Image (cartoon, rainbow, N blue to C red; front, side, top):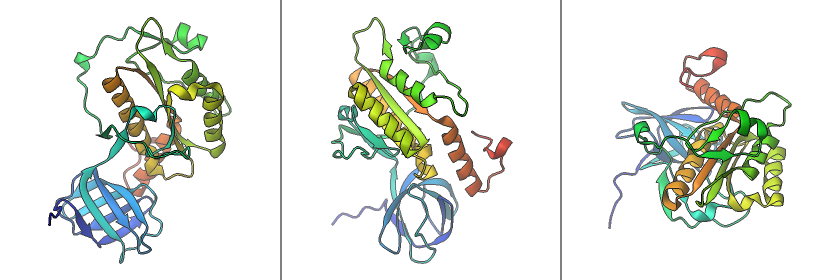
Length: 282
């Protein structure tokens, strides 16, 4: 019989605060390690080690800490890091913020399983940004041009149609003068059910879904999931770009919701707040 010695299980939850739990009397715990939490009712939740020190681990719970107590809850440290199943078949599908199907379709048959932490890129090894990405928005194409390998923030205000603009860019964007396939990875964070329905209907109705991988994190999903969603989207984009030589445009909306999730987690960790309560490392 083979025993996996990397898996360790504890029943030493000291406290639960918001999306975080503190587990004491632990050994050999690593930062970023994936954790399985089994509640007294038998429900299994997934988490990740946010902070590891001598004898204590702070775990962020993706599904929220409801149902977790300090006496009967089992916390299982897997010895593995956060990964996502990736495949070219993800194009044309809708997923939640953790990469699980949201469109009622089957699970993706993975071609690979990649860490969401990514690999550092040497900035001096990058190609000089020179390939124009046409968005179809005249003010962007003419005055604030988007170029492959470049980030472009778009600032908006309350009541302005930023969702319609993001959807329009996802539908229309293309790289001119190349034969390489083009795809879009679209990740929406902290949006309402109405906004999620708008994106799904818009992409399906216009046929744009045929080239888009969509991740939708809803406002009633846990804040922890909102923080992971951009990493899931970028890992998927890197897979399609590096393995299939595709041009990939990543669209992330709404970054304000992402920042508020960071603020919520920072408050639960009792960190010293910065301006407007946001963490200083944001």
